[in-house]
Length: 206
Image (tube, rainbow, N blue to C red; front, side):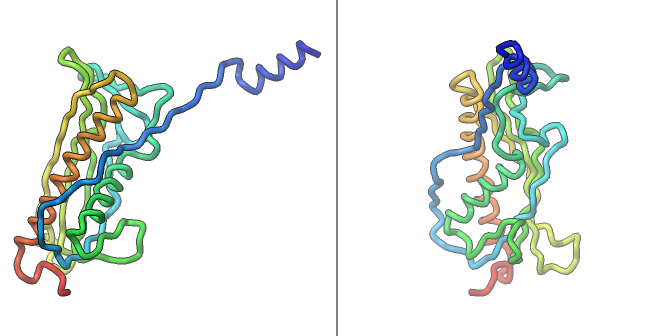
């Protein structure tokens, strides 16, 4: 009976010990803002895209120019493209700088459309140390402009690197969070300035 019980245990576990998978999210304190004027503008987020190499919850690292790998027992809680878009959307909503901000999952439409593409999202390991890298492109469009070629208000590349303070998956998450905090502020400031500096008809009527 003892042998039979051990055999069953081996079948159900595959003969290997069970490991807990740790899930991480980007997190940092709420941003503060200096702009005194709230824009009467409605904004809608498209779902962000991401390069195929990073299109999974795996926490990816690279230690040379050709090979990438990932941590065995640590993951992002969600796809990085959705996680990054959610952070920017939350920061934009909490800023109080815009009338309304909608995610791609909401049925409401916005006049200004924010699109994003994540080009790199990884831990880089080299002789200089370990750094979190986030590289992305953000575009802002005015949906009320009829000519497709004239809808884009700006399209800009953003990149931020942050050194790890602790050599671990959690240390990587902390560094990536600091990078995202910086990028989110820069992106929101650029969107705010672009809408404010556009023609008088660019912002929605109160």
